[in-house]
Amino acid sequence: MLQSIHCCWYTHIQKWPLCPSFTRAVLNVIQWRTRGLHSVAHKGRDPWGEVCLCLPWKGQDSSLFSRSLCSLVCKWTYSAEKGWDDSFWKTIGLEDFVADNYSKIGNQVLPPGASLGNGLTPEAAKDLGLPAGVAVAASLIDAHAGGLGVIGADVRGHGLSCEGQPVTSRLAVICGTSSCHMGISRDPIFVPGVWGPYFSAMVPGFWLNEGGQSVTGKLIDHMVQGHAAFPELQAKAAARCQSVYAYLNSHLDLIKKAQPVGFLTVDLHVWPDFHGNRSPLADLTLKGMVTGLKLSQDLDDLAILYLATVQAIAFGTRLIIEAMEAAGHSVSTLFLCGGLSKNPLFVQMHADITGMPVILSREVESVLVGAAILGACASGDFASVQEAMAKMSKVGKVVFPRLEDKRYYDKKYKVFLKLVEHQKEYAAIMKGD
Image (cartoon, rainbow, N blue to C red):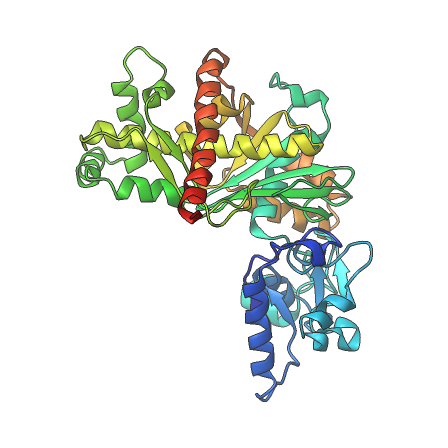
């Protein structure tokens, strides 16, 4: 039995004593579970691992228990260069993990896409309906697989500046219920408020920085479904056999008249951290903000609030990019995937607000492409992950920013930054004497 941990541990490489963001609550959970397991029959003999380890572990000879570098450096404070840090586990009271050369949490560590053991076991092959011995690849975390599935695409012939630039000029944004912003570099770059750098955590041989927004798709749902006009929206969208978001997008086109659709929010502004800020402010105390509300609550108001929320998420991406670039990254192109990348308004707002072209993959399920890349490397079809990325990732669509609207979005961005500045001022007032 694999003891599974589904969590969000993170730390700067070799900086865990100095990183206050390390999730103390998760450590408490694993300490509680470990100590509780000491009293049961198997008493800690089973290995520990996260969800993305489960299928590879079940598919290979479980006695080998090979781990992927991805999850270990991102979630477990493992160093690709130095391995495990004994002092860390002893300090937090989990010195049992150090025993037997870390056999409980893995001492055979492989880069993503490496072939595990002798391939698929006969038992697993029978369960899956596949031949025994099929290659099993060292895995990636889901968002990292999405990033791998898009960031290495061959962009020749699309008129993009990144065609003549290294892959480090690309930022993968995996956007769904929440969003992850994956940027890679040849050398380690420490970005305040952005996780990492993690060596070979997504693309072997490159350092990964991972920004993120705690709620994106969930926030849009919250704003739309909580509005008084939502029942009307549901009825009208159903009558047209459309999703509520397709209907809202068409409704915005209807009410914008001669102006660009983004200009409908000139008096309505949203700060999107309804669930705290993950990057780059790393402040879980922050709250959401909306300014510019009126007494009316009709469908027009709902559509404009929805637009302002989408814009706020895109401004959050711009803030993350600025933090990464200030630390040493150079980003010129966005590669979007995930459920929100299927929404054309969401994509266009990210292009307009960041001023960067957005690449959408030909295969919309980019996480599956990333998994396929790993499998193709493990099977020997490609000599490297980078080669597989270039051959298997395909550009489906390029969305360019409306540069003529730049001045408007620059002004909106100034308001966006003022919102969080003012929120902190309000909090200071209320905490004062």
